[in-house]
Image (cartoon, rainbow, N blue to C red; front, top):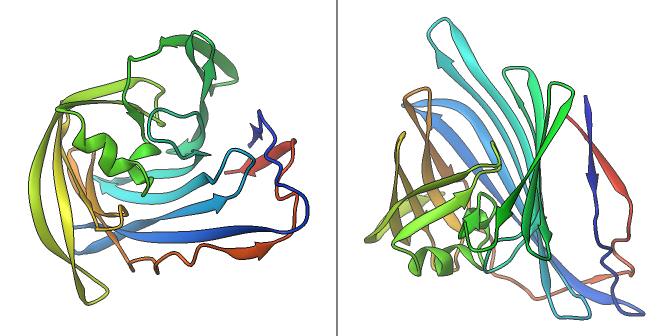
Length: 250
């Protein structure tokens, strides 16, 4: 099945050449000592008339043994980076069943669209009813700022379009080994009904490690390699992006 990602607003750059930069983070997903998948997060820093903007894309593949079967999950999640809530599109295939969640901003709040089983459901979400989205948590420019300013975190889930909420507690600094190199991280524990989620961020704001619960089992995600420091620019031709439709097939 093919899903369409509608680019609601065009992003044009100024005349002539411009500067842009891309960072990529790859996470190994492990259950016990067994590899069960990977996640790739790409952050594109792009110039615009209003200053630099960030375009984030996350692609996840996961296969977790659950009894005689395996839980299979594939997801592509994309949107704009922001210090607060921002719209996104998430196309997923769970156990072979596809669905799509979109979050779009409106003048009076937000609208969530959920497409599955050949039907589309839409509902409104009031402004101020959530603090972040699933995409915010992998945004190196805003994640730690959001976590540092909340004792109770409300996240609009890219998997369901619903808000999940739980107490957030700082666990302080620690060392995590990434590609053989110790990295000092700031850690948080997010208490959810299904179990605690621990998030660790490096000194430049990149998510270094985290865990997720799948069928009552704990999957650990660890960054394969710390991204190189920003160079603040690769020469790009303009315009870089215009209005249109991008199709993603899962």
